[in-house]
Image (tube, rainbow, N blue to C red; front, top):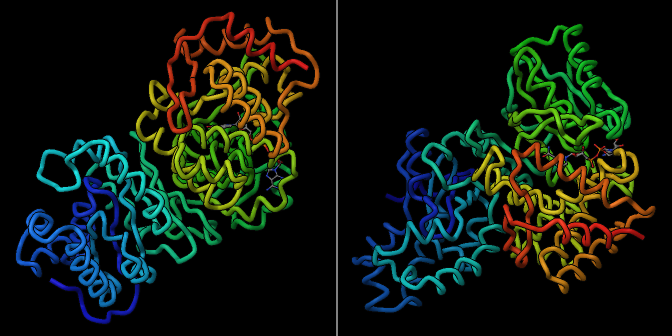
Length: 510
Ligand SMILES: NC(=O)c1ccc[n+]([C@@H]2O[C@H](COP(=O)([O-])OP(=O)(O)OC[C@H]3O[C@@H](n4cnc5c(N)ncnc54)[C@H](O)[C@@H]3O)[C@@H](O)[C@H]2O)c1
């Protein structure tokens, strides 16, 4: 059934690759809204008087695409507020359909190519018969979906789209929503100029802002807070002593179990405030508002919180997923250049993990715009969704961190910024991966980003190896090395011998 003709407002339109679960998501949402979903594939079949497979066989793909385009454009032109529509996987290849989508809220139901193949193949679908053609089709459409999407919702489980609905309905043009999922909970990530006014607000009760003195001074007034607790800036303050001081301030201010913390700052604030929230009165929600590039592309998502001990980085901590992450890249305008550079290391790391569109953007020098931030967040969230507790796939996010963390620990956390250490760690990981051309390219990217490619003062390789061994023990003795086989092909759990690690670290010395 076609939606109401000429209804004003924005419909929710679900797009995505075959097998993503667009029709199920649309049905789920329509049920909640008390509407009938419009499945454009079924509408085209009704109009053609045959199935899509029969149309492909009898008249060819081009003819089918014409029928599909006409139906999409008519449906989208007539659709408005409250309508719920799902499009066929290939419909977005039409320019006219893309233009008709512009006035609606477009929701990409995200699926990885392996899962899509498992779901779509062997069912007579004409474009899901040959695996390599299927992979190529996926790669060719990926950017189109991503560019059209106002919201990205993982297509993994039933109920996911329904939990995102309150934020899908209120999403304002110019802002983008990523729906983050993990075993222990799902939450909205809003990226855009309206992010700090997320509606509905993702946590109940009163907001207690934790920030650092520099960020509080610059951006504290962006949030309407019950109280603002400002810690001194810097990794040196990512300690248990800071946790105690924040918890005591919360207690003195009367923060209760039904209130929440808002972490406004870089990775240090996010990690410390998140850890306080995980344990204050046995756990209260935390909303992350990242203000550095490191935090916007990495640390604000995924729920790892914690503090350092002199014996090891991030040695005391907890998993505590945020209730929401609000990202306004305009906050980066005040970030000192060295801090921006430090963030670029995490961006390069994430681009190597992701490959595809993000890698191409980063190679072209787009380190810190909204598109890159969004793609990095999406890459990280996909790894967290697959493995919240870091026992498998999530470990790819440690690319460059095994040596990077050891360098930070061995230099007492006061010589290298986290991002600078990660940049050096990436060079070590690429050396261990045996990819010299890619290592050269990454070295050039680090230079462009203003990052060091060698240590300023020589470091004792034994100290780095000892720090790395402690890191390994913390992970239960497993070998956590992450190696690169190519952009987009990064594998965790790779065995590497100590001699090779020593050589890779020694190479970082001046
Ligand atoms: N939890 C995770 O998953 C995760 C991931 C990556 C990194 N981290 C942690 O993140 C930390 C590093 O984070 P970081 O690089 O954001 O450092 P940071 O939090 O120390 O911030 C860097 C500096 O920038 C200043 N600053 C922040 N935002 C600003 C702004 N908008 N304008 C002006 N100044 C601003 C801060 O005051 C600080 O001096 C490390 O402790 C690292 O271990 C955690």
